[in-house]
Image (cartoon, rainbow, N blue to C red; front, side):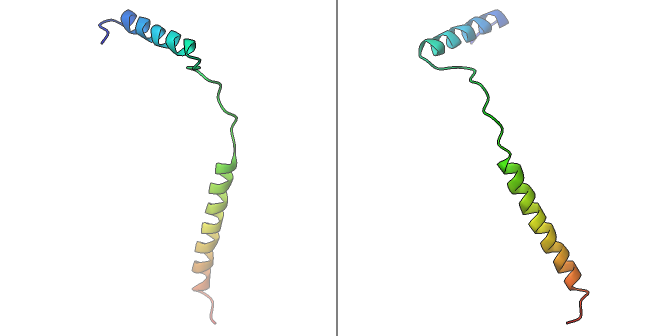
Length: 63
């Protein structure tokens, strides 16, 4: 455990140096965004809303 911020930063610098020597990139580039999850949630919500609206409207229909 480090007692001061300087010691903590020195420890972090050593860990980063060791990771880079081992070929590990400690800060990889971010992945491109994929909007498929948003489309999936949106389509699910539309289907659920249509289902609820149809159930409500069906109560007022005389068959």
